[in-house]
Image (cartoon, rainbow, N blue to C red; front, top):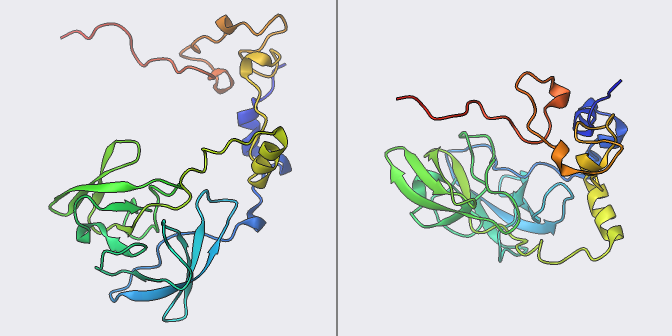
Amino acid sequence: MGKNLISQRRGKGSMRYRKPVHNYLGAAKHIPFQKNALVGKVVDILHCPSHSAPLAKVVYEDGSESLLIAPETIAVNQSVAANTTEVANGNSLHLRDIADGTAIYNIEGVPGDGGKYVRSSGVFARIMVHQDNKVVVLLPSRKQKTFDGKCRATIGVVAGGGRLDKPFLTAGRKFFKMRATNKLWPRSSGAKMNAVDHPFGNKRSSRKSKARVAPKNAPPGRKAGMIRARRTGRKKL
């Protein structure tokens, strides 16, 4: 009798796949919207295992604190502003107030959600054009996406660029890196497994011809590998 794939077992919430949230510093997002600009000072640059980029701890003039995804060239004791109209490195603005061609990151998908797009280390997006109350943004994937002009973003380029340029060199370093966020590593290929563990596995050899497109009406455990096309053949006019 078969059993669940590894990707299916990971959703059970067992200890092996649980995130070590006690090591996380908190959510790095925009502060709640306010009508007036709020100026703060960067008091520390922090490292969080749940973020690929460094975080800046900001204390605002009203006494509140927040974590900001640190842009390049930011430093301790530097001033940043939120809900402002001044275009400066580290400031958070509405997209409608940012000029075309400006580098931005941590873009909100819906006004007020705190930021969902362009948050990894070393990445940035650019404002392409303003269309009424909409703003077209060029994402790091070279795709263009339209956002509401009320969505906020941070000016600059995310710090930590070049993080992937340095190799791990040893398996031990890779082990501790993956353990910090409890990632599944090392990952075995489905063709290397037994037949009971994966649809591509078998006891004879790791032949790649077994990895075929799953049938259209296959059960969820069989839906592995390539996804079958919705339709084939030429369209009839």
